Structure formats: C-alpha cells, structure tokens
Image (cartoon, rainbow, N blue to C red):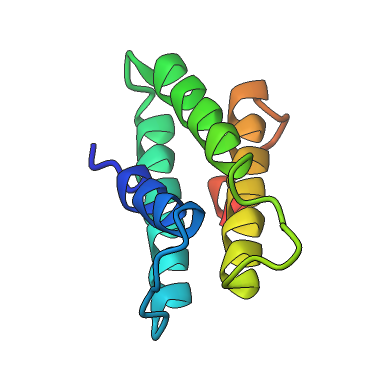
Amino acid sequence: MENQFQAIGMLIGDLRKGRNLLTEGIVEELRDNFREILMQLGYAWYQKVEWLDYLLDFHIAEAERLRTFVVHEEGRDYPSLRAVLYEELTLLITRLNMLVNGEEGLEWKELM
C-alpha cells in the first residue's frame, strides 16, 4: 500500500520550518492524497485483509500525530493550507474510527 502520509508529513515539516511553498494547486493535491488514503483503506476494509486491524490503527495514530502539528497558530504562514490539513486529518480520523468501531449498517460510500 502506498503511503500518502509521507507527502503530507513532508509538507507539514516544511510548514513547521517556515519554508516558502509553491501553493498553486496544493489544496487539490492534498485532498486527492486524503481521498487516495481512504480509497486504499476502504479496499482493504472491504477485502477484510488479515492485517486490517494494524493498518487502521496505524493510520489513525499517524493522522492524530500529524494533526497535532497543524493546529491553527496565530501569525503563522499559510493559514488556509493549515486549515485544510487540519480539516482533512480530522475527517480521516472520524472515518477511520467508524471503520474500527464497526458502525451498524455502515456503507463505504457514506465515508466518502
């Protein structure tokens, strides 16, 4: 499984270090990365792969860890980019928790 968290983590690292970023198209690319994470996890969930518990736990923990680095900080650069990251990470955590907790009657399309 490809790990889109690597690209997201690198972006967050650049934000934390105050690097100048080219932001054209970055929001769309971020949303695509998060959508791809969900699609990959959704496929694993649907296929009931043997290592599903580990996979979901890992992605929840990683999303929570990354989210701690993008909480809105007054006076920081790229506040809209930080807001998108925080929002997408929060949505991912919510959706993954739904998968882990086995919500009754859960349909994958509801998570998208």
